[in-house]
Length: 143
Length: 143
Image 1: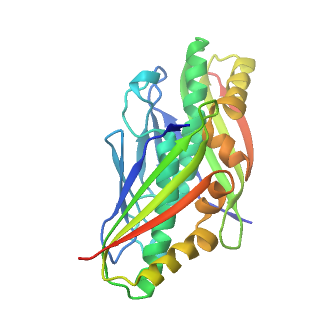
Image 2: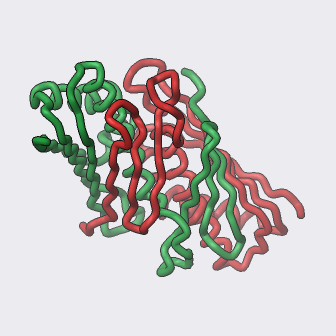
C-alpha cells in the first residue's frame, strides 16, 4: 500500500454549500449545489466531479497509449453520462463513456488502448465498474 | 431511472495529457498528469478529483443537515486521504474522511448528520464504500 494524494476542502460560507477544494498539485477548484438545493451554483456538483474523474482517468490512459503507438490524434473529446437511481442514495446505475477521436487513427489500436485502460490501468474504471455498469463507445472522425 | 448530468472533456493538446472539462452547470476545470508521467501539471490528477467528489458530496449533506438543525457552524473543513494498491489498476483500498467543524455544535447531532450522509444520502459514499473501506472521523473545535 502506498499513500495517495490527499485533498482538503473548506466551506466558503456557513450558510451556503460551496466548498473550496485544494489539491496537493497546487490547484484549487470550487464545487457548489444548485439553487434548488440551497446552493448558489458557484461550481459543478460533486457527482459531476465523479464523472469527470472517471472520464479523465481513462482519457489520460488512452491518449498516453496512443502517443506511445505514434497514432496521429488531432482532436480528442470524451462525453460521459450517467443514469442514477430514483431513491436515496441516488447512485449511478449505468455510465456511458464515449471517446471521439479526430485523426487518421487505427481503429484496432484505439480499441486496444481503451480496453487496456478499462481492464488494466484506470483505477476509477475498476472501482466504479464494480458498482455500476460502464459502457464504452468510440468514434473515429476523419480530419 | 433518471438522467444525471453529463460531462464533456476535450484534450487541450494532442502531445499532452491535459483535459478541459465542461460541466452542465456552466463551469470548466482542467485536469492534467504530473510531469513524471508526461503531463504539465496544469490541473489536479483524475484520482484526486475522485476524492474531491466523495468529500464534497458528503460535506454538502452534512452542512445542509446541520443548517436544518440550526447548529452554529463557524468553519467547516474536510480532509480526505486514500491508500492505493501497489499494482495496476491502483484502486483506492481505504479512504479516510475527517470532518473538522469549528463552532458550538452538538456532537450527537454532528455524528447523526455524518451517519445520515454515509448511509442514506451521499451517492459517492455508497458507490465507493462498496469497493474501498471508508473511515469517517470528526473533530469539533471550540470557537
